[in-house]
Length: 256
View: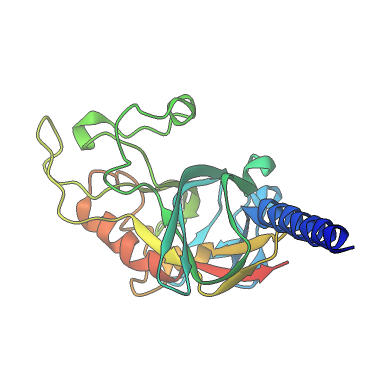
């Protein structure tokens, strides 16, 4: 009888360990991000492209013909302060609906985190010229005379200028650069980290993030497309103004 009790106890411990191992295996998840877009409170998709229907804070009437941007280096901060970094990136392109959702290859433990964040563009360390073959194919590169590396964002369209004529604009964000040529210099960083706050991952969550496109033209710098419309990449002052306006562009919509 005593021997049977020992066998039973051993069996129960083995099964419990097996269950714990199964739980540990299943208690991880990819980080699933979905990007949506709006102009203030109005949803924007690629079906809204190529029509002058938006008015920015300055009063410029404009259209959007292309909008794509890069997100990278997703970070999750545990309640202990430990930071998990996912060194992956995604080129969000409104003309490619598959790019609006992104699931990381790296998995993380389910549970509560004090913050989730991502980088808009690349950090300087990651922004290495010619490194990313898919971005090269997407013509996402920045010319060597402007420091090389990659764009952070390309937004293009038309606007009604001060002469009431339809004109083109190219609102392209890159690393701010001075002295274009063989020895460019960089006055300040213009990539930025978007912090979305606390999050709880259960294993099937979709984290929906919205970009308010209107904010790029709004605050703290009211953007007049008559003044800043094209040739903004070699204009470090314009790049810094974009960076300043970027700080409230993204917000967390839902976790489902």
